Amino acid sequence: MTDARKKKVQMGSLQLGRRTGVDARAMASGEGDGPASFLSFEEAGLIEFATDLDMHEKFLARLTVSSLNLLRTIAKEEKCTIEELNAGRVTDWFSKDVARRNEDPKSAVLKWDQ
Image: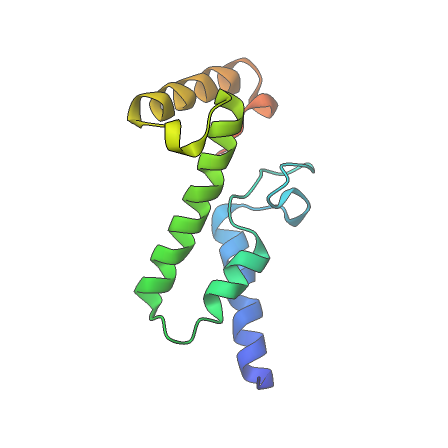
């Protein structure tokens, strides 16, 4: 890979982090001082390196992988499998997370930049 290509990929990851307010220490594990991300730098890099995907397909791939990772979190908290999740259970989980955020912003899974 050329140096220019490496720099572009690195910049893409950094820009992704800036857009989402991601703290690298919190990446995927939910640990650290910043908000957790549902798309790791490694996952974003794999998608970025997929040369057969155009920018729209890469966006959709990032969205799909991050959604899958969030569904894993929801299923774990709801004590069920991903296959058992449905629109109602996901909506209920979001309501619970909003209630947690209102009570203690640090206890919520989803943290929005203020």
